[in-house]
Image (cartoon, rainbow, N blue to C red; front, side):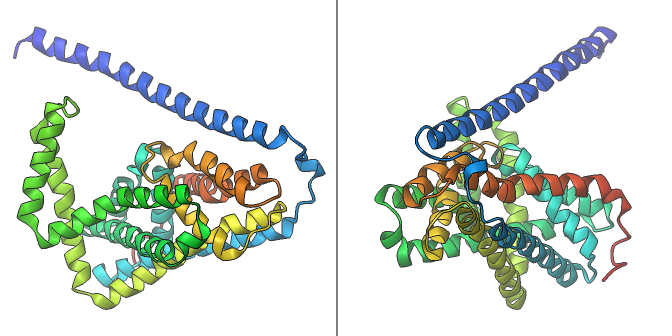
Length: 356
């Protein structure tokens, strides 16, 4: 390649970098604007009638403590699960590394569209802490699969058992539709374990169709990447299935995590004057999260706040707007804050295995 060709390539690279930065800034601005619009709309709906301002509300602040404890329980369960997976798959574990792996994973999940940033960074972080490439991939993948499965099992059980009695027809239908999107990837992974060749052919067919629709530019690269991800997840599933006791343990910890996070709406609604029984609130919270699972914004921003307000303002009294803000803090912004702190202190980690 001649000098001019090299210069041209460098020139193209310098042109692409600013455009990528501009796109990132535009996406960030759109994300912030969406949050502002949704919060402004819910505030207008809340205070357009006879609803009181927060200084006029008799807030039961003590009931926010259980919300904080639920968040702490979720963090403890998620950390314990990673420690357990580390110990059983590698023979060594670190509570410090496990905690920071959880927090930075949730941090990147919450700031990237469709929650795709957490696992790659967890893999990178574990590699930097002395785990092999295979171990660093298997640990967060096992944690992810068990978390997905826990939500699916819990949601299906609740929707079948009492969904018709608690949820409106519209919410019930959208919850099931959202659950189908939520289960798509785990089902593909499970099928790839049972029918690897069929899934490989289906993957190529799907990307061929997307390529013809001009939605995918490089079909071969996309197929190779997708098959690589599916293969990694499949190998992780096979490894877990060979250890049934470990499967039960990490699934139990995942269920504890999911239950803790879905109990938070109940306590924040009570704190701000809401009146709703625990089971109805719990099932409704599951339905909301299921319904917005396919929204590609970071942390389901906009859809989460709007859905929470629309649903619970019809089911209970009290200041649902302020309850929504506090629920969003415990459910979303707290993870970002804790993840940011974990990211800032990760270089102080001990060597893996130092604090078994």
